[in-house]
Image (tube, rainbow, N blue to C red):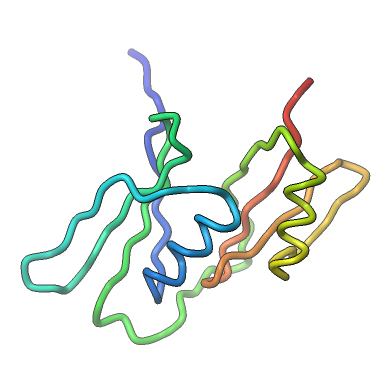
Length: 123
């Protein structure tokens, strides 16, 4: 029996703001959407265009407070072939929240406080 990861969910407070962030910061595009019949939630799936792993963003209409992310000791990692250009973009966006030059990685923070690791492609 084999398993393949297909998506990870993040709950967000402003779906359009988050969708814009993920498009600008990581090039992720919406590939499908689910709207509750009663309007209580919307789910969108974002991906990089390779048909692989997706990021699911869920907006709950009646959730009226910031999400508690605990100590934020979890993250999703993204690999890039142009680490320097990615770093420059994220620096311009003001979303870099932690850097570890010794390991050659850094983290960006989305509008809801989720951390996303940026790593260079393995050569």
